[in-house]
Image (cartoon, rainbow, N blue to C red; front, side):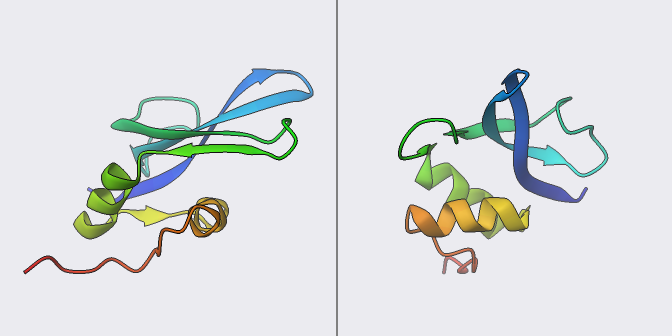
Length: 87
């Protein structure tokens, strides 16, 4: 099963709010997901990013692939997207 870390859109028209989720690549954007690992609110000044770092790192180590947008958000909070093997 291929797994991605991506954004799911919530909020109303012109007021987006995103959840950072781990989901199967076959699931729809706002549909079924495995785990919610954070939130992103671009409407605040500065944009609000809350991420459960330990859970994201664990999923990256298991082979989950983040989308390009999620990669930028992870870099902002100081998480390298290169998964390191745990010995």
